[in-house]
Length: 280
Image (cartoon, rainbow, N blue to C red; front, side, top):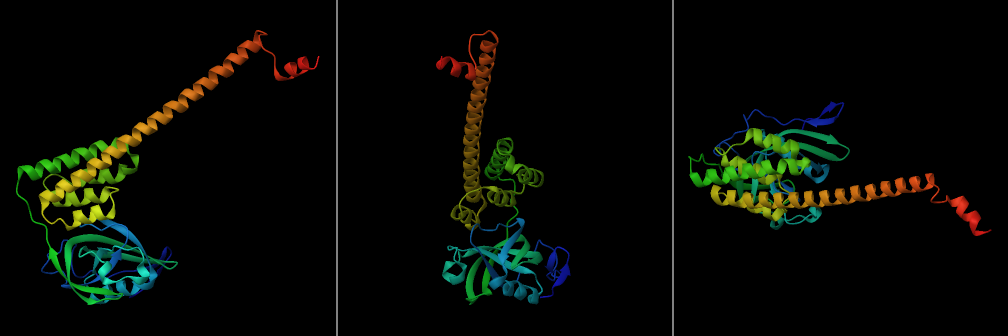
């Protein structure tokens, strides 16, 4: 893998001559290198940098570079112990991703990837890093105007709109979501919405493994509604704490104000006067 020195660190640029991101399943490689993910599954349509250890995963990225297509498979694993990783630890469904950029920095690799398409592992061809497998792809269908599908898609969008004012941490991501996704693109909408949630990795993997759009939308709407419930609860707690703090501060201010008035009127004695009177 060629390495170019840059001010920001070592940059590893994959060959992208294979074409654009929207690859049909008949041009995606039948056998791909697999990279394990321990925290969350990666979804089609997602674009984000991954931070991984240089060892032992640099060899996986080099293998992708040598094959020229720039496609790697991201698969969730059931363990967080990467040193003893076995093929049995991998879930069977993952996401084929195009590598845009790899940057080396102090023993870590920052890999910018974009999810392209779901796949299922059919047969392992290499059971140690770099892991390899023959896979079956599941391209998304172009759905016609199905009223139930559109209803779920609209419900997801509306629920996400309710989340925006409740949790500022979602601000930028949700803004991107609302600008780029519509009920007419339910597959990408469902996947991206799922990726925004704080759901557990098993729940998210269930979404990834749900190929048919209607049950997938149902699962995602449940996850988004849970997110909304949590955000509302957090808002109530925050408002309650702020109200208590304001009440306490107001009481402190009034007590200090009352002391000042009493002292001004000679109704109370300061600490030194009170101490002197005790010893008379």
